[in-house]
Length: 101
Image 1 (cartoon, rainbow, N blue to C red):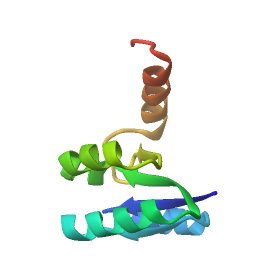
Image 2: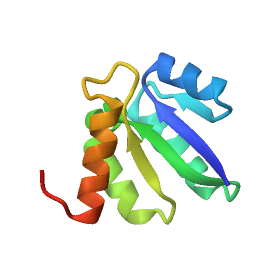
Image 3: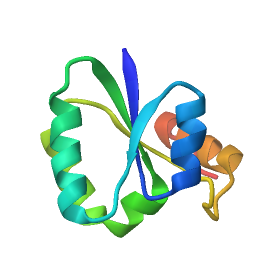
């Protein structure tokens, strides 16, 4: 199972490439929609990672696509995100298991 990253942030893209994860830097919604459709139909990709800055900018598009696709689309913090990775992961886990903070 492979991961694939979609981001607006070049530093995040480079970091994930160094870790061996393919990805693409997205410039606009047309490119995003085209790339998401291609990635979600690729059977070799198991999980799509998307940085939070991209999700915030195209929130409605992501809500629509998450409802239509059968592949996990996971939001992660970008390298320039105002949220720390630790806080984001803790918040995600608390949300999944139903713990209120």
